[in-house]
Image (tube, rainbow, N blue to C red):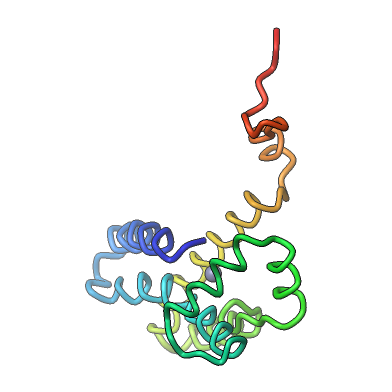
Length: 148
Ligand SMILES: [Zn+2]
């Protein structure tokens, strides 16, 4: 999922959390920030892979990957590790969330981010039979319409 989508949906999510827990005040921004900033690990992967620190270079690395499914699968399976999207990082936050409120807020944002990533994966990789049938397209790229 693109960073702008994470930003918009993260803003909505953190605002809803703020409405439920108004005592959070500006701390609700921690949820929004963690929803978006977790993807900084994509930048780390691009830097380690290309050896370039420039943000545009990292952006083009991922555009190239997104536009080439074979390359995407090869890179993802062989050597890309998104450290903030791992179960170990999630468990690390979970453990600290019992002691630190900030860790709990970050955990909320990270959980929401991972939920969005999973939803996006279901949409893209057809992990749902229902979604597949609702969005199946014919060979012309048009939505399949049942004839009566
Ligand atoms: Zn992500």
